[in-house]
Length: 274
Length: 223
Image (cartoon, rainbow over all chains, first blue to last red; front, side, top):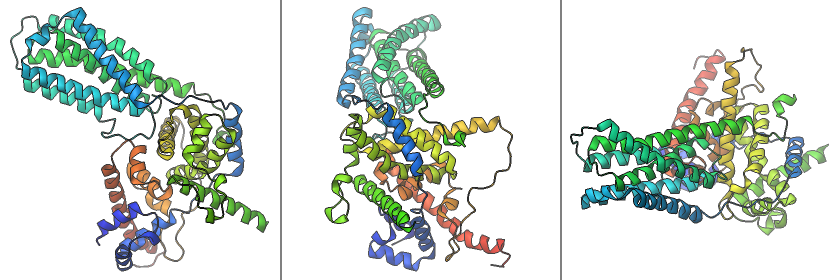
C-alpha cells in the first residue's frame, strides 16, 4: 500500500479504525501518513451552535410555515424545453421557409443538426438539474455553455468553407436580427419555466438559458439561410448564441443583485445583534 | 450541574447519531438506545417539512444545524460569521424548500445551499472590507497544538489550503459526506473531487512535516 492508496482509503472511510489491515499497517510504518490520520481524526472535534440560536431559528421558520408544492419532475421540464426548441424551429420554418435546409448537403445536414441536437439536449439537462441544488452533473454546468459553443464553432468550421460575399455586413445583420427574433421570445418562455428553481446561481442559469435560446435561433437560421459562407455562419449565425448568452448573463447578474438586496430577513444577524 | 452537562452531551450524541444514520439513508437500529421514531430519515422529514409539518421542521433544524455550523465554522474560523451563516442558510432553505424533490438525497441539496451562502457571505465581507479601515482584532481562540504530539490543529492546518481543496476536505472529514455527495454539492465530477482530496492530503502531509520543526524553532530550540 502506498501513500497515494492511503488517500483513497481515507477518502472512503471516515475513521482510522475503519481502515483495512493493509492500510492500517502502512499507517503504522509511515510517519507522514500517521500524522495525517491523527489530524484528520481531530477534525471531528468541532464546536456546535448554541441552544438559544437553534430556538431562534426554529421560531423564525415556524412563524410562516405553509405547505409548498415541490418542483415538477425533471422529465416534465425536459419535455417542455424540447417542445419549445422544436416548436420555435417549426414556426421559423413555416414563416421563413426552408431555403437553408435545401442548400445543405446530406453530410452537412447530419453534422450540423446532430451538433445542434446534442447541444440542445445537454443544455436542457443542465438547466433542469440547475433548478434542484445538489443535482448530479455529468459535465460541470459552468463548463457546458462554453463546451457547446466550442462544439458548434468546430462543427461549422469543419463543414463550411469561406466564400466570397458582396454584402457581408447587410446580409449578416439580417440573419442576426432574425436569429434574435427567435431567441428572445424563447428566452422569455424559458425564464417562465425556470423561475421557480433558478435561484442557486442565477448568473450561471441565465448564461446557460441564453446559450439554449441562442441555439434555437441558430437552428432556425440553419433551416432558413442559404448562405454557406463560413465567416457568415461563424459571425452572424453563432453571434446569436454569443449575444443571447451575454443577455442571459447580464439578466442573471441583475436578478442575483435584486434577490440579494431585497432579501427579506427573518432573523437579525448575530454579528449585528452583539 | 453535572446532570445538565451529561444531558446536553447525550442530546449532542443523539443528534450526531441521528444525522449520521440518516445520512446513510437508514433508520437507527433498535439496539442503539434511541427510539427509531425520534430519529426518522432526513428525506422523510424534508417531505413533511414541505407539507408544513412543524415537528419535522424542528427535527430538521436540530439534526442539521450542528454539521452545518461545523461546515461554516471550520471554513471561516469565526463563531459570529458561522452563526450568521447558519441563520442565513436556514432562511434560504425555508424559501427554496419547494426545490427539493422527494426521493432525492437531502444532504447534497442542503450543502449546495450552504455552499452558496458561504460564497455570498464571503463576497459581502469582501465588499465591506474594501470600505472599512482595518483595525487589529484579537483572535477568538489561540492557535491550538496537540499537547501530546505537538501537532497543529485541523483548522490551522487546512487554513492555508486553496479554497476548493479546503472546502472538499471539510465536507469529507468534518461533515462526513461521501465523494459522490460532494460531487453533487460542488456540481463537479467524482474524479475532480478525488483529485482535490488527494492534492489536499499531499499538502497536509508536507505542512505536517514542516510543522514540528517550525514549532521547535518558535520555542527557540534547535531542530
